[in-house]
Image (cartoon, rainbow, N blue to C red; front, side):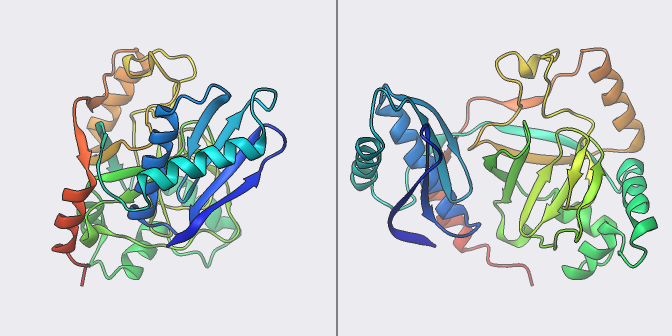
Length: 287
């Protein structure tokens, strides 16, 4: 839900958190991206970085060149000019990620956690039960049957928060309590209504349903997709998941290790929120 007006919070003397609303909603998140784009286009010299989040964004700036009060006033003026509605278009790449659902590495991670917490249901089965799905195959079909909106990046280099664009493909799951101490690199997780891809071996709390052999973060920038950035995704990209077999997963891992793997990225597309919202109205929820 959008706030009646922007809310500003100082983050030390060099950052401002700009909050537009509260919730994990596509319309709210698109409004965040639209405002970030407008602030970027304004070319305010003192701004050093803009970081979109789910319902807010962070502004990093030079306080020697502009005051907190002047910068917040300028952002408020831009927001008043563009309006709070979700409309218009943004450049949006489409990236297809291979996924081995119910793979061996996430299965081993889940079983390791269950040694300490034996009452924990295995993640794919818990997600199936909570979403009325017959089995893991149905879960894989549903999860891979939509595009996802890259709503935010953060918490770990390259980590993405993905919102499903097809209403009938929404999947919900609680987070681990307590969290895991480790998660396989490339694991696909669901927490709340979000999907994420773990960029590295890290702690985590999302329910694990599979793993992608294609990296989303490359600190050495060995692969072509990382020539301009250490992270694969940008806020406003779209992601599709393509189910692969164990053998295909191993082949992709070999190509990655050899530095030959090329990500499936469509660069030229534009996302129209007006057309999307019209389409989504007729899709309804999943029964």
